[in-house]
Image (tube, rainbow, N blue to C red; front, side, top):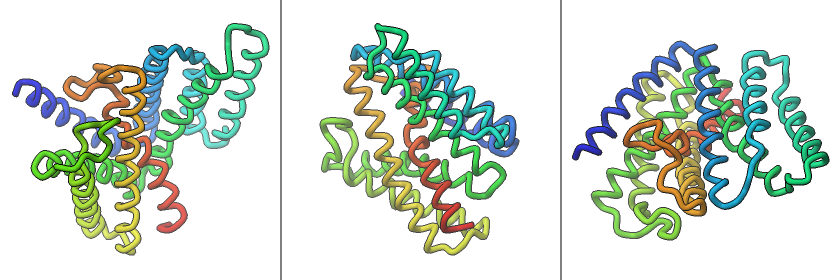
Length: 258
């Protein structure tokens, strides 16, 4: 009961700061994403160290800073940041005999997986659609947990996440869909059928993001990525679904809703 109370309290505090940051937007959103990305990237690299993969951490952190700068100053293309990251990695591979291709690949994967995908949240700054990232992802998590506990019988992926069930997964999709429809009606977003399609797609992929993060933890033999959020683990434990959701919502909105 004490652990549940801690989890609920931390969740309430986290939601308060999330709403505040989204409302402030601009620099506050950019710097928050930068901090989350640095912490998440550190958690990812630390997990890989457990399976004898040695990412070149400082290059990953420099690239994350470059993505932050690119967000703040769009004239500095994010493609340039990623191209420089690849070139620098290859240069280090050339001059350092201890660096292998696996370490280079893990370094780049971390950059693409965490700061790059998370940066898509910033691209929706100032729009009504930015809230859908959190409504769908957190809505999916919450309803999947509730429905799974009440009605869950059939395991979704027992080898990766034994507690997740098919019933919970479907409940998460349905719950996030209801929240999306309510939000869309209140905010006057349309057409509604496209937002329904968006909600279903993103809900499915947010659960896949959760499973990907869980599989990495299982491979690395760790329970949580970190302890920065009491009762919730690390950044990657809490934002694994957001990482997958944000680019999907951004590109769907850009291609079909704007």
